[in-house]
Image (cartoon, rainbow, N blue to C red; front, side, top):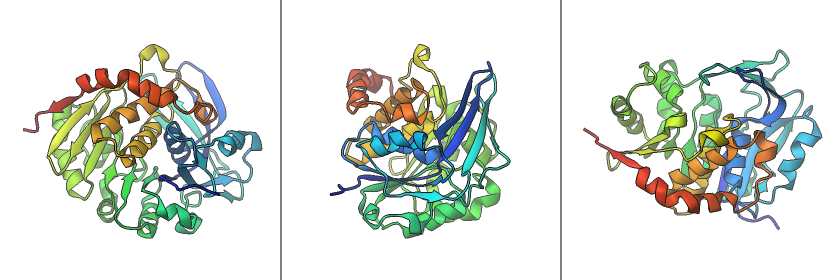
Length: 324
């Protein structure tokens, strides 16, 4: 008998062709925001607690999907098959780590590859909360309108649409969201402000984003950690990363893994900052591996053990910022 879903994750499944600046290649890997976030949440799951709603390509090699089917913490009833190649992406890294996405000529578009309300297994709607990985805003709004009220909903906005020209859609979307998790790049482009500023310069814009609806804004800043803004308290916290530079192999999917790990621990009742540390732990685990198949091979308990090792040190490194 299928167990209860704690966290349902919605997002794309892709095939990623990764080229780093120094010429390393990872070609044809299983990827996508939804897949990576579900894998990050799966570090903390062993009994089908994480449900995944996504569309995978009929042309996807079966071997890529075997780890997904075997993972005891993932429920894949919501994985639907779409005809064709699905989304295929080149991920090209600059010297400074900035990433460019380029679709293959035979790739599906992001709208047709996005999960829709009709793809959601009915029992997933009983989940304690939901994470929506980067999707086009129209598809995000359709999913939000299909979800029950009164649950935690976390949203990671899509870099192609998180701009002021779509502000009308974002105003509708963010009213329905509990937590929003933009990257620094997405955040600065949305507000049309310079990238790489001191955190204090971002505070007014974090407030403005929270005023659009979310109770918590998590600004993901890569190697600088994350800034959490709690609207009700008007509080700002800087949570550092816990990954060691000498243990990082691949940063692809690190932000998604943070989101999955953070959300499932928040749903389980961990306080906000402890859940954020769990997010950093999930991100660190993923950065020490190469791609979703390796993520899904992580034994249950490894992430929790790392959290227990670093939690006191991390708690001492979290900074409450002066909110001015």
